[in-house]
Length: 132
Image (tube, rainbow, N blue to C red):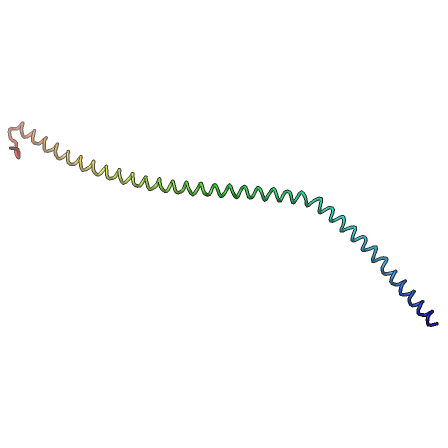
């Protein structure tokens, strides 16, 4: 009798285990099917996205290189413009010096011409003051 009780208990335990495992296995099969479908969809949709990301990365690298070259050209241009500004300042200084020299020369010759003019006037009047 004890063996019969043991067999009945074992049968009930197996029956309960099978009753629990069948829905669990069916649910697990559904999950695996969903995971497989998701993996296929991701593979199908992410490959073009990965290609786009690679293209975007290469475009960004090209733009970065272009910006670097443009920055270098702008720096060289800035140095050239700065040098040009210094040259303009030196040229303006030279012009200022030339204008001052011309003003001094004009003043000198104006004084000389005034003296000659007054001497000539004095000569016409018969007197030549200050001349031998």
